[in-house]
Image: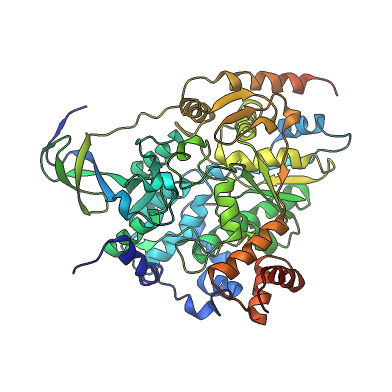
Length: 101
Length: 471
């Protein structure tokens, strides 16, 4: 992935919404220890490097400032590898359907 | 203009922000902190069934097929006592434009936003509702922001939620991806204030009236094809809107079918916990929403929640994560329908419930949802393993939320655990009294509590006595 973006490129930025000490009093102890963070994507308003602060224009036409995290961010989630615990279920059920009552 | 964006300042403005973002005056329906005119609100603020049908037809939402699961029904009969095993039907809600029943809610919310002249719509949701709102917003040519809870503090997110972000972004929506915490609501308020967008809340009367067509259609389809009403309608229960809207539609169609809510049992995992966040393999349809939203509905982003599941639930049952993954596999393998997984929670329950009924009865599972990368048993189970959860084949009772996922070894092991609804009713009444800090309630409030818990004034009175509250 490119470490730099040009103006107008699709990028992702990150910023802290609430530092740990300003979080809602209702959050559990473990969550209270960490900040509330945000990632949002949009078009870079200027060129920049990953790790630098940059402004973006979001799809809803807002201007948001944050640290550049990714340039042309995509998706890597998948269907996952085959899971052995699932792989025989179909055969088991088909065999049951063939059994006489 | 300077706006104080600190947590406390924004939360203090919540009433004002919500009112502007919903264009709905709740005050006229509210009698007191405890009681309000629910039916009045639904009638006046929502849309009639005919209006909703017309709105949804225009955007290709609804009229989904009701499919008979012949092989699964056969498997149920093979594992039931002789003569038992009701026919199982499923409403294929994945056939909606964005792939789930949430399009029904979004269609009405977006229609209303457009009618009132809002420039865009915002929804705070990590579920299928985000994609539904984004899809509907495109059809109405409105802007769209979806606020999601996606990551833990390591910046790790479940494949299922990442997919839901992707889908919203595919529709061109702005997606705000947050780490775990209830401050999702705070972020939404800031954005509503900044953009002047409509709050396409899951819990407004518009959204709930959108689900009524689902209940109505399934009864109509059942009658047309089988000449009878379903004995049970099984509904995946999370925030309560699915149960409420479906049940209202079933009743409007004049059917007396039992409304049975089903959730995945995630007891013991805290929904706002950074550590627990990625220990669960279901991001919705589970007890982490199902129980709190039933026992205290007014915890949402609207002044009064239109989703009030205790009014409608005849039974509430739990299934395990492993059972839902098993039936998701079964649905694909013996019915040729690759759907879910989370939407199959009600199917897992329906299999056990159908065994209670004679063969000539009907059980309707009222939704499916689309499957995709991330939203898939393999992706979710692989992720669970990576996060320290053990995955085994074994009987459902071996499931321990956050620790063990046991995939049943045999179809006959599918079962449900009954939740004591009276306990939930008591919990609701306790919440109503304690959260509103009252020591005495009026006759009107007592009657409201009876109505809202689908119990009786005597039942409410006995609970109030045990709490030391005068009435």
